[in-house]
Image (cartoon, rainbow, N blue to C red; front, side, top):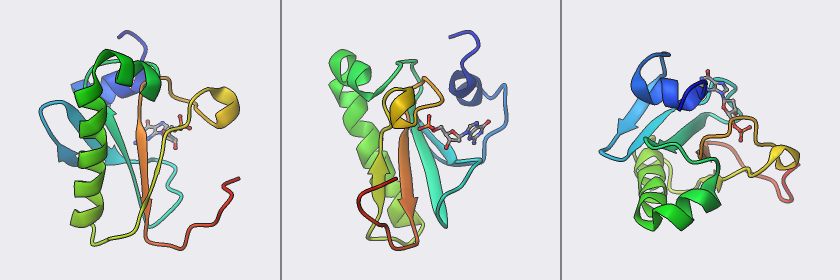
Length: 112
Ligand code: DGP
């Protein structure tokens, strides 16, 4: 999709610090890291948010989660937090589905 930042990272048009790549997903480090490990797992195909992806391609949504778990394991963590921000008020700033993987520090609840 034109003018989508994460589509451009998936396509290699903008550099990303890749940590894991599968047929359907790409995982790269978040530029604005909020934890010792903060990785974004995105589908190669463009969907606006997690619910849209789930409706269109449930298997691809599941692969985001299995990829996230593989990333956490590779980074040496059993405990991690997965976050889908959906909508600007919930903190979504890039409108291409992405799963945040956060690990390496204690997580508080409720989130801010
Ligand atoms: P969200 O706010 O949930 O939409 O998360 C978007 C994340 O994307 C945010 O944590 C910062 C990150 N981000 C923004 N621009 C870039 C970029 O150009 N490269 C990388 N690696 N991450 C980015």
